[in-house]
Length: 386
Image 1 (cartoon, rainbow, N blue to C red):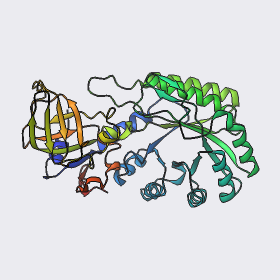
Image 2 (image 1 turned 180 degrees about the vertical axis):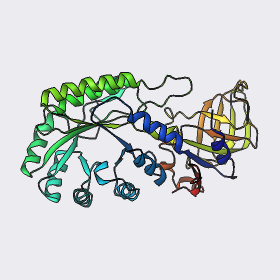
Image 3 (image 1 turned 30 degrees about the vertical axis):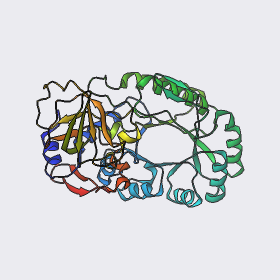
Image 4 (image 1 turned 120 degrees about the vertical axis):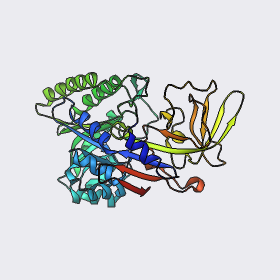
């Protein structure tokens, strides 16, 4: 059930509109904070949603921010995120990025042996750095090796990275891997087990950073299994800490899970074309405004509803294709979904739109930028998309 305040905000203006409900974001932040994993820290990926008030809400919940650009670093610091709660993990960093992170005291995760060497030259000795290690990628419910994965070093390359760090007076204090997005618990746990095996070989290991988006369930899907995740992670961390003889920090990067469910995207139906095997519904929106269905056409799941219609109303017998207002052939906000027959003038609302949606808004197709509304009691208000 979409909150009435969200519906009111999303339909107040005759224009495509994002609405963010910070109460939902706080609930997700609290849910992940409650995971029974000793020594954990939670980091939100700013590239999922870089709205300043979303970042500020994450900061106020006590969490850190994961960034991979100078612009998002400035955004996090501008939202008063302390430098020691910012994690900068990019690939192919330039000298200015490295120098800036070292001067600010921001934790850095590097991507190659050459980048370790370069960081030592630019930043000087005495720094702790993390290193991205390619230990596998989640494929369905399993973790497999991916020879084409461009990020990180291979486990066999760790001795060279350690040698490069030693040459420049650096400590490799952490390992990081990214296992995929919208994942169930078990493959994440299995991937973390692989990462812990690698971490045990590092003499200065201080943190393990597990990137991988917790699954955001569609209405007919089970919720993410926090019990399996917590139990599995605790077992792997206990094994690592017994091996190295000291506590190791665990960095949780839950991906779009924190912000996805706080966001909604509203568009208006302006045309309906009925075909024998489907219905094309034209809207005033576009994938330029709502890009996730374009970026991930087979994976982007965004429940869609018609505002004000009975949710129990039976769907049309034909699949519905929600289209944008352009001549671009792939301008579909949703493909082949089940909906009651839409009518011109109806408002459609897409849920799970709080992550990897507004942050991907593009100038492609020349569309006006959507409105954005942040709901947070008396501090709510409209703004142009930034």
